[in-house]
Structure formats: C-alpha cells, structure tokens
Image (cartoon, rainbow, N blue to C red):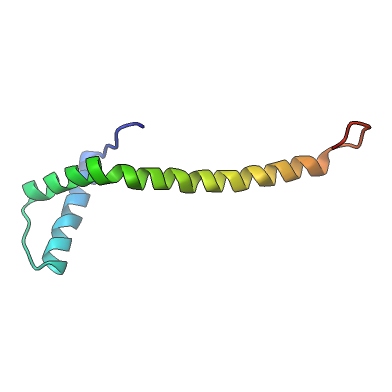
Length: 84
C-alpha cells in the first residue's frame, strides 16, 4: 500500500475541521499544532482502515461493471459449434 499523503492545502483544511469539531462538539479549543498531530495520527493509524474500505467499495463497483461487460460480450457472441 502506498503511503497516505495530503497536500499542505488539504492538511490545513483537515486541521481546521478537527479544530472546529473540538470547539463545537467537545467545547474545547485545540490549537493548530496539536490538531495537526491528531491529523497525523489519524492519517497513519486510522487512515489505512478507511483506505482499505474504499478499495473494497471500488472493487465491488468494478466487479459489477465487469459483469455488465461480460453480459454485453455474451450478447454479441456469434453462434458457432463451439458456443457456450
């Protein structure tokens, strides 16, 4: 698996979301530095679980599309003595 990375702009946006969550839901102020450390923790320790779930979801979509393609190919198959 490749390392999960974010651009600086993405990190800034995610850090602000963490700070907002702490402020609105926990009634606590979280400075930018601790919020960034929390983001790094989630990225490294929790992120792979979300990443793997997303891969499974993408694979399920791909499997459905492949089934559609197989069906479409079967429909255009010409009859021969070797047909399925």
